[in-house]
Image (cartoon, rainbow, N blue to C red; front, side, top):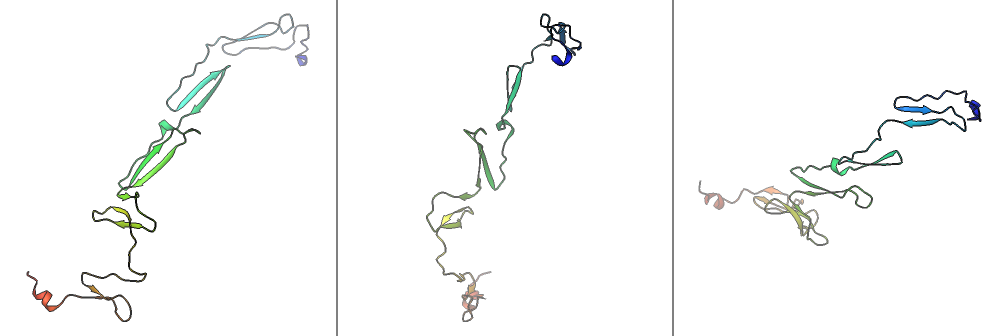
Length: 163
């Protein structure tokens, strides 16, 4: 402490301790300053989301996000969160659309609505591009020669209806 002129003589500096800190000695090589802490040692306590450790008076912590994260499904999406959020086991969020079966199918298949209302892979339509598929009272292909039109049925079909 050469700035205080403390070499082998009494130090001209004043060193005072605060709350829980005691200072003894006069600052010479024969009677150096000794600073002690009378406060109890501080421990650490982990929580589900914070892993604390103490080494040589230094407290460090690792945040664990897993206990803090969750996912909530909706009527149309089923979500899954897996992994522990570490480099070895990162979080993986995946989702499945309710009523959609993405298994099976072949190259060229498209999503088609099934009879029960769900969706699954199926063959693409066999109609050429630009074709209008008609039925149930519609006729024509939408071209100039055969315009799309409503066909209400024949007289015989109407006559056969029982009301």
